[in-house]
Image 1 (cartoon, rainbow, N blue to C red):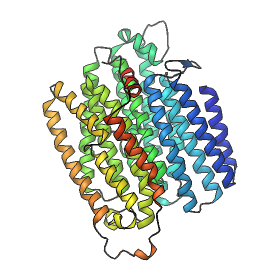
Image 2: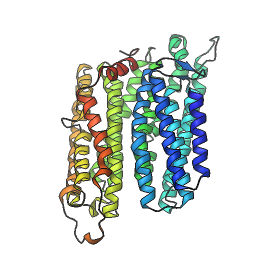
Image 3: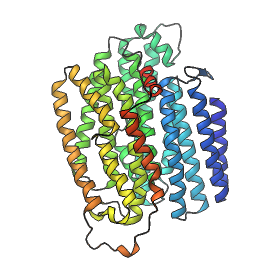
Image 4: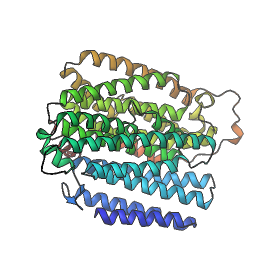
Length: 474
């Protein structure tokens, strides 16, 4: 089914690229959603089945594929709304939707790749597709953001490639050169530790560009700022999850060797630095899209911190990336409506949003509560488990430091969000404010309430998928 899915996505993408008719464009994107969900349902009912040698429907891959398919629906819906409102030419629309379908398909298959070289290939494809989306506006700022994203991602995939070379060297005198995750885990005890160390360092550093972590977090921030809102929603949720999956799979290999403590130290340093960097930027940022992007860096830092301390932290990390994807994508979807009201993304020029779009303003308010992990946010549960893991791991100093940084982030986030919602903007011309229909915010409500539901009362099947994802680490 994986190969037919890829062929189907490629054919639909080609059709979108060639077609210039709006109605056909709608039908092709609808067909892609059907294909995406058909593949996802098939994967769910074929857990742990390997196809075409390089793709396995393991619990982690299927869980994140479900998240991807859920977010894909509002992403495509809001993309149509975005393109229609901007009255964009047919060629621009064709490139946009071709890039989006390729991006979604590449991310989904990357989740399921059981071979690090195959995952590397699909990671590179996501870079190309995302670059086309970032450059959608075809202006100087978009060009600058695109080149920056391409440049840093090119370095990151080079790092991953070098890491793969070192990983192959770590096999030493093994009778096989198999670089599948399953083979490497099974034979982790016989891997050369020197080469494995180097491989982990390079692969980890490479995937930080996608995951939005120190040291390569900058590419993602600019990309989310320059890309259209629906595309930024994908970049800040499911694409970041792909980076975490890349790190998590190599971590599972090194965690079954004596190098686990060293790997935890590397991940922990990156995690704390990521939260610190997010804190610094959150204090001074006045661009609402960049504020959401820096918030994502904070959350990915927490995820890495959870992995580095282990125990219940593994479960919390997977739960956190799932819930964060729903929350952050909803905020980026809502951003488009904010921009339509104010024609600006500077918080200095945005305010009193409740007056102009009360339905959307409630989305922003709930999104803020969920994003800062305040009850009843589902992220409150995952962050509580992360703090518990830190406490049980006797990382008291780090726990206190992180709590202090998160307090500052909540203060900075709240200060800006409250201004957006309640403070009137001086000299704002209300005569040109468009009427925003309440139904345009319904998808964001659905995503936010889904994150609350999964955090507070997760169904057994959802919990089981997470437990199976971390089974060999617990």
